Image 1 (tube, rainbow, N blue to C red):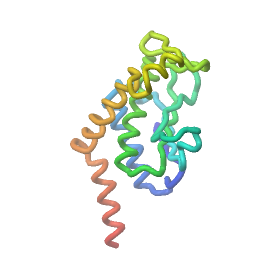
Image 2: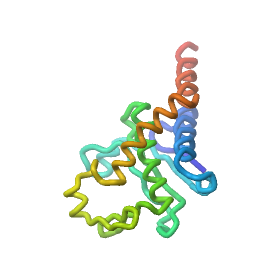
Image 3: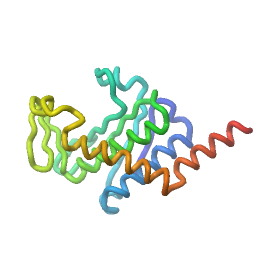
Length: 171
């Protein structure tokens, strides 16, 4: 189950774009039985960086149900100020984190440490490694591009969204 809300989500075609894209990404990365049991709320947030207290952020994946033994409820926040293509790339990135959480590959702890495929990495070590070189981020950055290109090249999801925009402009 995928829902969308937040800033500028009153447009049905925009909600459909995000929801269909998230479903496509999930089906590419997870078994169908796992996909059926995931509940995802996509929240489009104005000034996400300001809300998170950082200088730059495009999106964020949260576990909503906090049953960390088997998380199935998630929230992905996307920055409303980004272009649609950047939002879809970010959604692919965050869906990779959702997959990592759902398959118990990734786990965040209250003390700031992270468990990745059985190895606990403390906050200090994370800072030393650097955000983009953390193994779960390396996977997410790699997958965001391949998933997005797969979406563009092998589905009509983005085309349908663009066609509807063109219809509205010509009317």
